[in-house]
Length: 108
Image 1 (cartoon, rainbow, N blue to C red):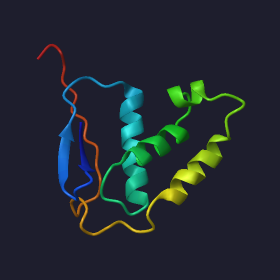
Image 2 (image 1 turned 120 degrees about the horizontal axis):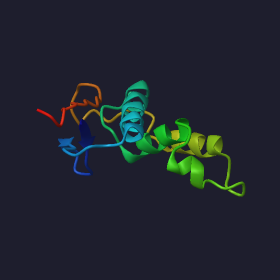
Image 3 (image 1 turned 180 degrees about the horizontal axis):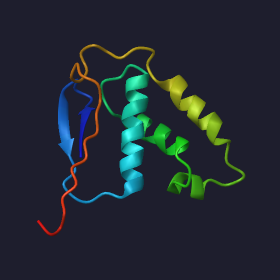
């Protein structure tokens, strides 16, 4: 699984996860990439992952949220509101964020 990420120095890298990930994590990362792209960002940040976790039912976040906590919709709105209004041109690659999965059979 490969994602493009930006760091604080306006450099970018490609990160590869070489171990098995759960189907839910794969779903979260794919949705996070979609959220980043939908909002005009060409990097995948923790804010995009958190937004994806808020959208996908039955994540650990949903299970640990309590009745006393603010509504998840309020948290989602706060995160979206805190994002810069426009992607900085100098951050990351010019292509959209993508998550790629390569499945390998253990019998190969």
